[in-house]
Image (cartoon, rainbow, N blue to C red; front, top):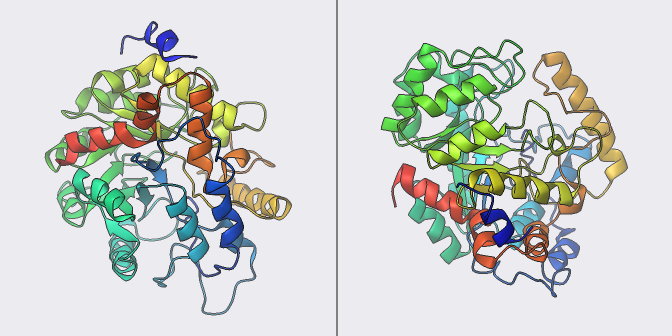
Length: 398
């Protein structure tokens, strides 16, 4: 689908895994340069690439035996990132990533746990100051590009930690949280998530939180929300909202994806939707990179090229042993189903990423595929990160 063809139709974590083990970096670094040497898109080195929901993780660490007093996962007190994951993320061209921290689901006390996680990630960023920087404004994303670092955008995937105290919006904004998702898959005190059959929408407190987020210049994220919650929040917000990571329900009728109405109203208000690299892109089988492209193209058709980006909902480093990893993911899906937080579309035998968009060449490959479909370099730059950079200038300031 070419620019001209689309323009004529338009009106307009879970697993952040940290740890050690750099020995396997070199084969994957080669993928970033050699595999796409004949690229149809040659602008990645200059492009701002914003993964609007993702992580810096090495999924292979999940298959290693756990050691006593050593916990390489996101809840760890350790402040050393896995060298392979860090190298892969930098090699991929990632300029900034919206990193989920704080409470999403589980037995922890939401507010206390979230504050401790913000403090821990401040230590991590300070410890890796030669590779990471904390993002406060859009200018910090541009600075990350200039300095060859990755900007860490602190974000939430649930707002349960607000409790019933509206002033906590200001607390989190002051601590550097720049984007807050209103709900996860289930209901909280702000509204219904995507798996709530009643689809009740935003509560009165939820509307107050949206307006307070506007005043605090924190981005409102409608990913995982129920349809009514999303539409209510768009109508309530005085500022553009975003959907950091989603797919198009017109192509895959699953609750985690957004309807054309949600996407169009979001775009009309100046927002941006990030398309994820997740199994929800296809209803009945395993999605591939072609499905990612199809969802991006549909979103452009509905929203316009200035309102579509990427939010992979994952890291960059490739899985070395897919057979072993399938067993781990199947166990994880079982746990999530028992906890009542699993979304329809999470299924046994399907991993939470796109297998042919793994490794540090993932964004180059996506750009090449879009280029081969007739999309211009200007449009590709927007999708890779230019649109989210503009959105964040609007919300946070330059």
